[in-house]
Length: 374
Ligand code: GAL
Image 1 (tube, rainbow, N blue to C red):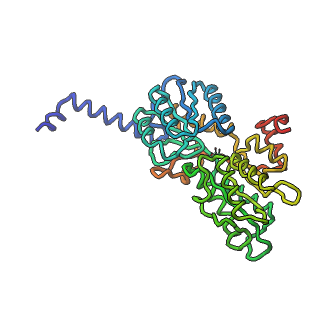
Image 2: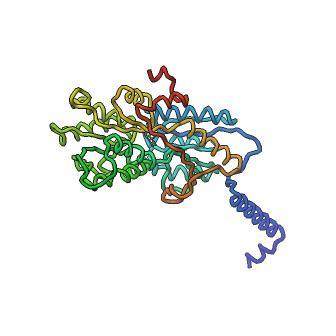
Image 3: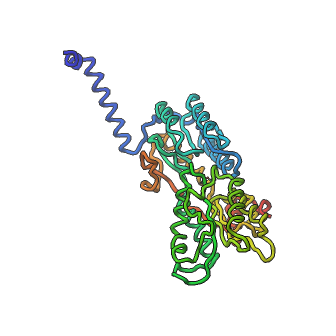
């Protein structure tokens, strides 16, 4: 029979055992924590960096920091921004694959839109690191570097609770405060982590009646802001004010990102907030972008969450370098980030809450100069 004659053939047997040995060696490498990607004898090559947009200062900083740190580690970089258009980002990643980039670091515009292109990356043997935002629905994501995203939402919500002096969420323990809620882009996986983190803190206060959402828009899908766009948030805030707050004032606005906060504050100001007799509400944020930190110092935006992009970049570079070296990158979370296909081993950094009382931390940390904040 064909199979028997074949397997009995000495050359075929030799080839078969070679295959087996290679496969076993491969397993051993996986088990030891190495990656399936071949460690090249020499360092170097080009890393593809695919980031969402230049419209936000944080992503510009992320790109510059990674490019600089990858260069210091001995690599070239190919840094591309997708202008917040999913099809641009896919084309950019395709191009990186065609050009033989050794590693892809991706902050997705739409976390669920990269399945096909990442299949191609996988077929070409290119490892992938998901940067800041988790890529969904594919096994072909090797590692995830981000901040503790649920903690970000918690920090924003706790800040509101403290500023309004709500104390413990006991029933009927005082005045009811009005809050409106904003969420991030619905196609960004971080959005639900921020939201859930915030709701964990706020829900008991809704239950006890200390906090109320006059608009009734309490579900995440009623509060999302496509592509984190400040203008979209401004329009929604205009609407929320005009439809729900005649003579009454809103006391707090949960905002998950500085660009959204700036839009919300513009809407509030055009409705007469920020004047004597009608103070601006507590407005949270995220990213410690320069415009927002200045707004905090001026007493407009109230809080932001600082996520040091230099540290995140360093983490992604360390991960990438380890993967390309056949070493196992350091991770500190192997359970919380399931993307629908696999739990992606992650390294999560700690976010820090910033308000008027501690903006100097950003100067001490060298994130901004004193002049920038003056
Ligand atoms: C999120 C990110 C935030 C913020 C937002 C808008 O994915 O975690 O820090 O930058 O995008 O860019």
